[in-house]
Every structure is written in C-alpha cells, then in structure tokens.
Image (cartoon, rainbow, N blue to C red; front, side):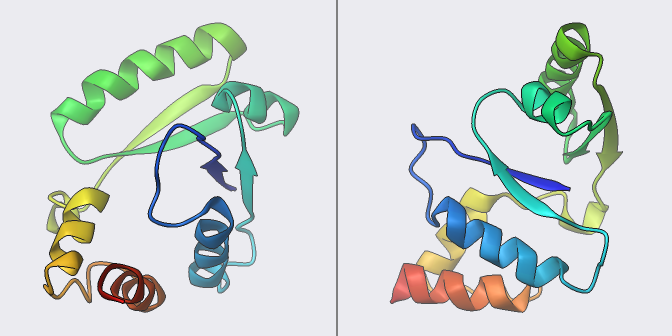
Length: 127
C-alpha cells in the first residue's frame, strides 16, 4: 500500500489525483502494490485499513530525529509499528525540492526519477 496524504495547506506541483496516477503507473509491474489517498492522521488510516506497520525511508540522521518521534507517537496512539529503511547512499542527497529546482532551471534529472515522472516534471516546470 502506498498512501498519498491529501494536504489542503500544502501547495503541491501535482494534484493528489495526478500523484496517484503516477504512482500507479510506476508500480504497475508489482501486483501487490495498491495506491490510495487519505486525509487526516496516518494512524487512523492504518487502523481503518487494518495496516499493522508503516515503512519510512530515511535519507539522513536528521530524518531519524523527526521520524522517531512520529513513530513513537503513532505507536502510542494506535499500536501501529514503524519500520525504518535507510536509503541507498547513491540517492541520499535527493529531495523533491532539489529535483524540482534542477528541472525548473533546465538541469537533467533523468535517472533520478522514473521516466514518466521526469517527462511530467519537464512539462509542468518548463512547459
């Protein structure tokens, strides 16, 4: 399950529906992946969908400080466990804001994002 947060306060480059379509396209070869959206607390979504664990990716130690606090709160509120997975060092420097900035100024981010996402980023940011 990949869950996309509906966050009305955040101005995203792509709508929730566009993000879901992209995720579905890039995960279609994996028959066991489902993409959904939710609003509110992640732990409430997990309880409603009988999800026992959340997997979070960590790029740097600074991510761990924040995510550990969230994991402990989530467990306290709902019993939902959080599993941490460190990123491949080859990609640890990536962030969505850096990818968008590089694309906006004509840089090449192919190979750093799936081909579909690269094409849509270029269309949206340089279009």
